[in-house]
Length: 153
Image (cartoon, rainbow, N blue to C red):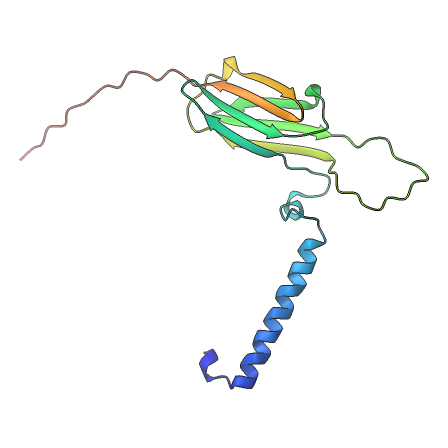
């Protein structure tokens, strides 16, 4: 359809599209360096998570600095790991002018579907240097049973 638009008009359409793209880019940059912030809602943070698997365990590491171990609520139900917590803001600084405030405070909930069946009763969690580490033992697999299929002719 654009092929039948005269060259001059085609350049105008491109210019308008570039202006709109720039407007959206400025809008999203105003929310900080992480785009997902705008989708979380006010007062929520979103921890970065790694999920690893070895022969015996699923290991989840969540980067959540500035919290205490008692600030977390961890649960597993139907093979879904849920990490909840709240990072509280430090006491308000009176008579201080902030030039930049990038640290995030608020509540978070992170749910992760685990890749294999796990033993929910033997979960171990630790928190050190801003990293929450959750070790979840895999459920012992049942022995495979082979079923021979007969072909009818």
